[in-house]
Image (cartoon, rainbow, N blue to C red; front, side, top):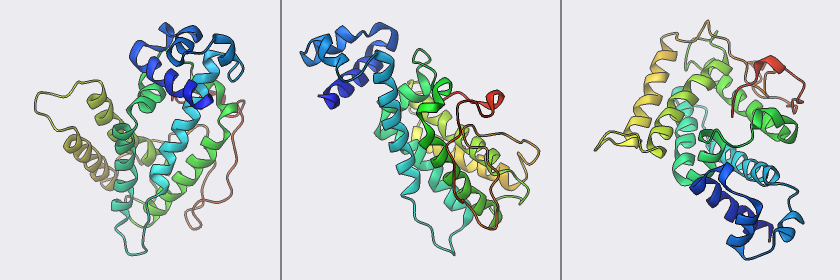
Length: 231
């Protein structure tokens, strides 16, 4: 029943917009009463947050399934991580749209207390990036959080253009994504971003380059109040 509610809500939110969808519309879609839905989710916002949690777990599973070997080019490791982010936008477009494109949904950043696992997953990913930096992917003093943000922006831009149907006629979204990530990697290799320190809420613990990711913590809602990024 919960699965049916989430699947129906995801489709309706993307098709009609979050504000235009009511609990009653979701109930009508699955042919149940609104009261039945309230038995599983107290509100429409709770349905969205459940979907967002699923989406984040899917997203990080894409990056964490990448295997690396000691002799791999560190830049290739970064390339594969952020290419997987773009692939997530292709294979799960509804989750991607709800999490990163739809501005009408509740702001996830205002409810980080419900998403402690995201901080832990980001901490692990930034640790992998720090290891690539230490291995020579870019100058050693480039902050790992900055590398994360710049490469994420490159992949996200191509994903958003494709999903929002903003590509030029005949333009290949995949080729654009690859070129954008490669351009960002070349810029980082040349020193771009070395003086740009970006906190990565809810993960802003320093990571020792010699050890990589260590024990992580879930940042509370009150931590780093002025350093949050939209999600």
